[in-house]
Length: 131
Image (tube, rainbow, N blue to C red; front, side, top):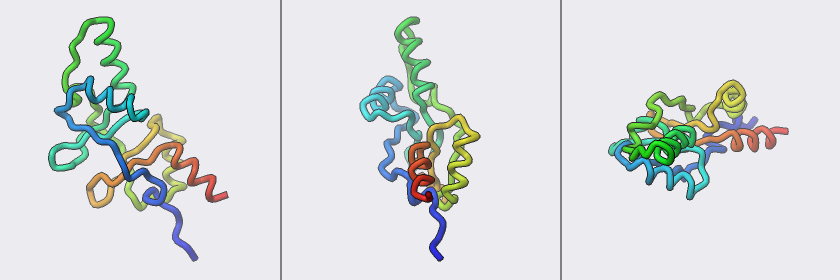
């Protein structure tokens, strides 16, 4: 009998990450150019310290455009509380988490390290494979 599919089997491994000290406008440009809805924020040791979403970035863009706010660093705008998924989590459980969560993606962790990112699309593709 084969092992059940896990987050590891469907996650994206080529994750674009940003750092807390990065200029927020540079981070926004990175998200837009890569057409991604958010990015994990990692420190100099590669530890996950937050996440920056397009929602966070919209606030910055609005304030920059209409209030002439200069921006700042990613650390000033990122969410420090991050929901993550372990790489070995059953893909059905991952899909269930997306159904009850407002998040579009989750960082995937293994042994305390960021190893990937799994999106709603990835979970949908996994469930479709199970049909």
